Picture 1 (cartoon, protein in one colour):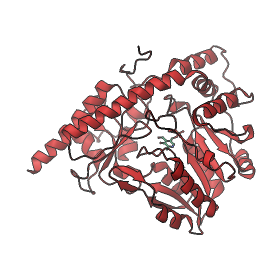
Picture 2 (tube, helix red, strand yellow; picture 1 turned 180 degrees about the horizontal axis):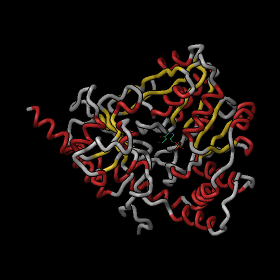
Picture 3 (cartoon, rainbow, N blue to C red; picture 1 turned 90 degrees about the horizontal axis):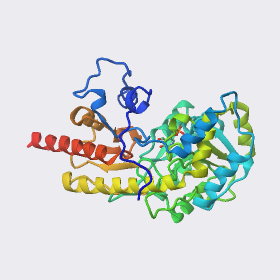
Length: 407
Ligand SMILES: Cc1ncc(COP(=O)(O)O)c(C=O)c1O
């Protein structure tokens, strides 16, 4: 008997949600109130499969803690003073990943994006380079851009839909004397790879050989398919000081708007730099919500994972049946599907635009993922199954119409 209802369709409009109201600027670079940007669909007719938050309700274990905190009625300046938060988060990491860290290493940030920007600035001189694997979450690129640093890319190898690291290329890029920082996405967005122990060890060796700083962005680490296991990079590099680990409850429990994440910095000097420039006040509601998640969120998470596993399964079946030339492997982690449509599209086609105009589906086309991503689409599957099926139907119909028109 299921305890939670992931089939419920929840109205998100009029909440200032980026997901519903911010797609014109985020996906299309237009202004959000640009009246001239018209689609053949009303805004509320779109199936939204883009930004990485979920259409599911945040669980009550989180909301109740926030309500409890609200009932204290004063929301003054707040910082994490007690050990409670550290203990709850550390226990989560010990139990789920067999990994832990010291209290003084744990800092918090208003989201991982601001942490990436700040850390890149703290670590790199202006003429130094930032390395990451591609395709990539675009904010790794933006962190380099915002700090005026050059980005260097190592393309993943696409082995029949299974993405692997090109160690030779990676080692070459890492050994450039100007390359000083790696942002490593573990598990990987957008391919959904869960890096295995031997892969992490090889990457770890190259990092150590070149004395690189590494930010391991592990924001997706709880959202694993059944049978997968997350290994923090810090676990295979237990004594490496130049390692920063970012984790959060935000993806796992759908609380991205609470802007609260963990940044575990081992190096004391870097922590000092961070503390000098970082205004480390926190939103009291965010702390309360995160406590609720770490203390009592596990059974909800397990049911969410089952639901997501099924959404991936039906997506795979649907694509096989209706878009037989698409290539898709179920992601090992995340709720994001990375689908290869190269048999249907040319590299120069803008797939975000195509599916918005022709299918009424908002999704992120390959070009939003830096490089090595032409003709892919990223689909967010974290939604009620009925909504997902409608999205998949629209996508396949639009592609099949395109093929018919070409015949
Ligand atoms: C790899 C990765 N890092 C960071 C973020 C965003 O983090 P935050 O919302 O904490 O700024 C995302 C969101 O999609 C992500 O996929």
